[in-house]
Length: 442
Ligand code: ACO
Image 1 (cartoon, rainbow, N blue to C red):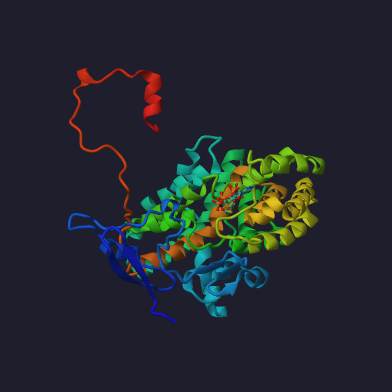
Image 2: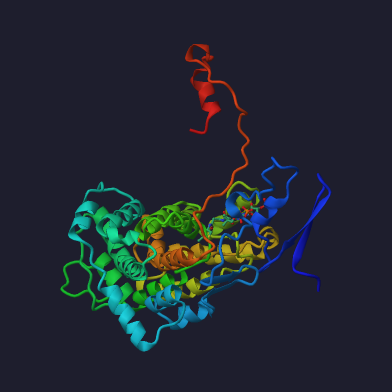
């Protein structure tokens, strides 16, 4: 075995550089010593979309995309989905270990003590238009929480970090449920702390005139499993947004609002909505071959298929597929499931998908479950944001305490004009409206 170094020869100068390799990586800053002269700033690595850049060291979640493995703090996702609860998994993610009985009891108590929101926050949410998108309401309201808890800005204070973590995990289902009921013109339901985390969420969503809401145990359990599966997923787009904003030492409410804003994008938290639209559009099994034809011609994508990291069956999709059948035993079978199963069968047999390693991802079946449970598609990213809050907080705290992390500040490759003198107004050519459009992205 040779030394753990990478030798680079700069053919511009003929110089050789030995760069240390650690954890299968080189430090991008080690490249800056590779220069052609004193006024050269040195080589930088160019990586749009950060496709091959590790931006941190983390101990929280582990993915092996080729093997279809996901673990939280070393525990396989399959075991957690089968044996754990969401709050226990959130403890594991946030604290690093599974709780003892007494620690779990304290954690559940501490989260439940924070399920209510300030009445002014409720009034704030009432200011949204009747047709406001629930994800927009969630992003805005979580951001507004920072004005209710100004001490949250003391991000280096352990006790403050702990309290804000409990508050966020406790309040986010309440805010999500208020956003849902706002759109329906329904009175908002206060938290019921006798219920489980997901049972209380279902109560805040669906309780009508009954004195005590009793969640269906199958649906409550299905939501627990879905929440466990969505709790963390290493350095995805929203988590990277959380770390990026957190690196400026912004308070955790601003951090989670930024992460949720990233999640709201259709490339991230919105794909399950697209799956439901696609399955509805297909309408019947007979129309699948036609869709596959368009997909293979590159005219459209099979939503809920493919993943940047997983080049195998997404382990979460396997579990969700099972949960779907449990949910249908209560809600009645969704007409979309037969289309989805047939679509999966055809795609997994087809060379186009096999060659490109395109398998169902987490979103392929989750949308069908949410749809069967009665959620409108606009709620899908909100349902993702609730459990991911534990992951965002854990990743944020890890970043805050990481001595190697400073304010995140990537470099750019400037490809614009060289210096040019200011052009007085009367000497500028009138290029007309059409050409103006060609000139800029805005
Ligand atoms: N349907 C058809 N073809 C696809 C699909 C798909 N869903 N996904 C990828 N491909 C093809 C591409 O056309 C490309 O083919 P080519 O090599 O002939 O050009 C090849 O597979 C590689 O695709 P990339 O776009 O390079 O893969 P990337 O890693 O950038 O994209 C992504 C990953 C965005 C998830 C993509 O697979 C996709 O668009 N899937 C559909 C949307 C979706 O389900 N998103 C949810 C992801 S999970 C999550 O965020 C929670």
